[in-house]
Length: 287
Ligand SMILES: Cc1cc2nc3c(=O)[nH]c(=O)nc-3n(C[C@H](O)[C@H](O)[C@H](O)COP(=O)(O)OP(=O)(O)OC[C@H]3O[C@@H](n4cnc5c(N)ncnc54)[C@H](O)[C@@H]3O)c2cc1C
Image 1 (tube, rainbow, N blue to C red):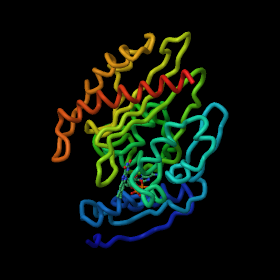
Image 2 (cartoon, helix red, strand yellow):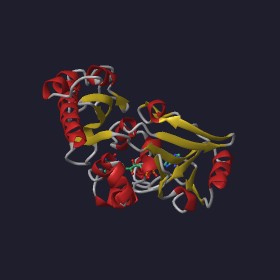
Image 3 (cartoon, rainbow, N blue to C red):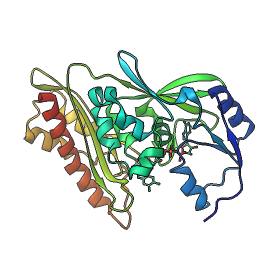
């Protein structure tokens, strides 16, 4: 399939991206192209212009900023997998990036693209929620930072305005005794998450101090499993406590059902994979 005709612009700086977005309101940003180009080939998207951000120098890279790790929007899954600072502080990212699609997708797909696209079956939105990331965007009225918990609004819908570009994803560095884990039931054809669960815990005196669980794939949009978090916070994380907290995993989700997995099956997977992710995160925290 061939996409509809479009104009092509290669931006060289963030201000130029913003300018091009203003000049081409029917245009779309092109990052790794692994979500946008298939949609264009199917004519599900027909942007009049593509604004290629792949060679804007400031948008790529991973910086250790002391209390946080700052990832540029066009940083690829491959870059994330190569990063020692990510592996040391945020192994959840390494674990999840390693199970995204196949090697071609990981070579081209970008973290910013995954955030902006908000595919309901994408892995990284769950990771961003569990790690309490913030998303920096730049538009005609300047810069703003949006917490991940407010960024993913609905299926393929985020808090990003059409005239804004996502520039950075900021991950706070975990403090204290913490553990992280990602569990995914991958679609056998594409690798997308039928259900994916990202878990982050900190322990204090043997009890759960902080717990964040991000669930993707099960519902229309990646979400924090607040009922699970409330049930486990302050508890000693025994296997029984984790199992009974995980029973709440599908609460508050607008469940997806399709030919591959029904709503009921996805709810079941959400509970099982939440339990597994939390158990591993707690084990990692205990060292
Ligand atoms: C065969 C296949 C298997 C896949 N399997 C998985 C999987 O298992 N798990 C998974 O999570 N994903 C999977 N993906 C999707 C892949 O991760 C995508 O590439 C990624 O989610 C989007 O990143 P991108 O850089 O390719 O974005 P693009 O395709 O370039 O862009 C996607 C959308 O985001 C917008 N956008 C991109 N960057 C920005 C920015 N900086 N600011 C504002 N808007 C922006 C674009 O305008 C577009 O609307 C798969 C894709 C393919 C083709």
